[in-house]
Image (tube, rainbow, N blue to C red; front, side):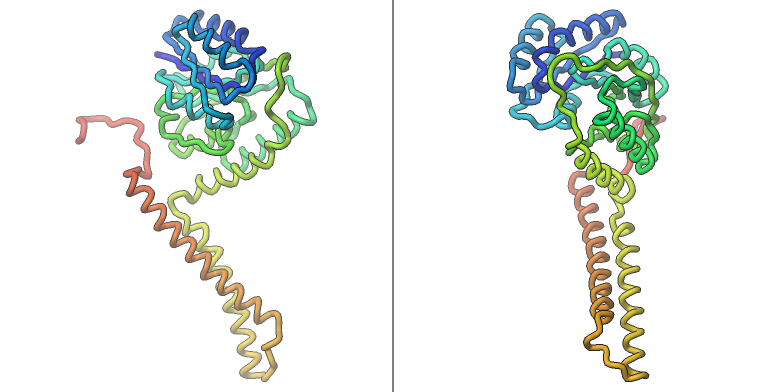
Length: 315
């Protein structure tokens, strides 16, 4: 079994050397073949030069330098693309994750496809970091149906065949367990050690909350309707159209049989509006169905994922 460690870094010049020493020590004790991929996400300090110096001394290290700061999700995606190990482990570069937790994650992944870390005794500010995180983890677990205590923990282990099917955008790296669950991936969680940040400046804050909420909506929509958008827009459109039809029918009866004027009534406008909205929503659903088919057929992308084939190879 070979292991690839993917570590995104942005302005972590004070932590790089210590991080590498801790990582190398933990990995050498396991006696496994490994590689360490440091992804410099457009750092403006001396992080990249320090990484280059580390790579010259340690040939197990690969340094990926992004042209600008693309964000943590993009950095993880770059690391996944270049990783060659059977197991891919991700972690932060701020020294808050402990490399000594990697062995127990590798032991657990023998029976699972993805192992996520749980910072049970988290060493971050309570009101600005831990409380929003607890609320976010509860909401994400409820919405996605994948129950984890700590979606935000970057210390995770993946089988290679899991990440090769994933395409990451926005801030969706934290939702990888939920996205991977679509493919029937077995997910486990293990307690990990967490340290307070002693050097450098945290890149996280409350500003990420809005991004996380929007990405959660995206994940839930893709999880439920990525191959069948009409089943999302259709019922809403039918309900809207039906309500508009009933309102229009009611007004027509009043006009024809009772003789009441309806031309200036707001209810008439509401009925017409609901019918138009219903038609538009159903039209959006149909367009979505056409786009889904064009996307899958043009890229020859199947709507299923095969775990393994038992028997003669079929060509």
